[in-house]
Length: 115
Image 1 (spheres, rainbow, N blue to C red):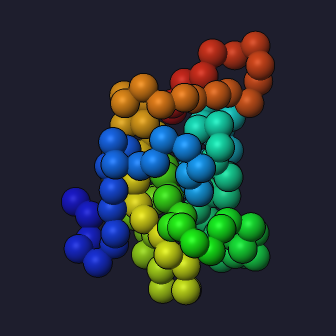
Image 2 (image 1 turned 90 degrees about the vertical axis):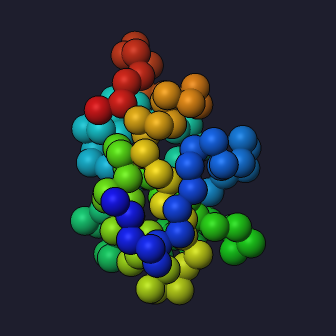
């Protein structure tokens, strides 16, 4: 269940392109399969790597994704408390894949999969 004060959107409601997407999963999850346009910063590293988030456009929210939505909910709450406009992606990468969105692997010879 998601906290009421954390903005949340379903994968169906996300823009099809030009999406500011932050993936907060662990490195092994990222390497197995991720959205092509996503930026990877594991949840535990966000406080130390906040400066990298300034690369995202100021005029649109940062959509935050993990496997199913729990870690991204935590990251979204943290980011919003620190001056960013962030939105949790409900259902995470599992929903992303179910909705037929592109998933790529870090290794070109590996079939992408969501761990």
